Amino acid sequence: MVRQVITTKEAPAAIGPYNQGIKASGNFIFTAGQIPLDPQSAEITGSTIGEQTHQALKNLRAVLQAGGADLTNVVKTTVFLAEIQDFAAMNEVYAQYFTGNSPARSAFGGNNLPKGVKIEIECVAVV
Image (cartoon, rainbow, N blue to C red; front, side, top):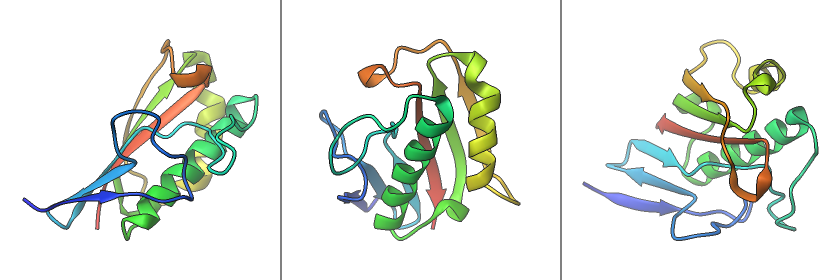
C-alpha cells in the first residue's frame, strides 16, 4: 500500500499527533475531522452553526484539493455536532457544498468537540 501525507496551509494545521489527510493506494483520501478554524489565525470562525459549517467545509475542501481531489470526489462524510438540534441548520449549509450526487453521510449529536466548536466534519474521497 502506498501512503502519502496530505498537508496544506489552506486548512488549519493539525493540533495533535495526526495529519490533515492521508492518500492511500493512490485512490483513496481520508481526511482528519475539520473544525471551523481559520487556517491563518487558528481562531474559531463564526458563532452560529451555519457560519461554523461553512468554515469546516472550506477547510475540508482545502485538504481534498491538496490531495488532488475536490468535494465531488467525496463518497462518505461523517458530521459530528455538539447539539443534534443544529442538524437542520447544518444541513442547509451542507447542501450548498454537496449538490447533485451527494455522498453517503452519518451525523451524530451530543459531542464534546475540540475547542468547544459546534461542528466537525471528516470524509473519505476517491480520486
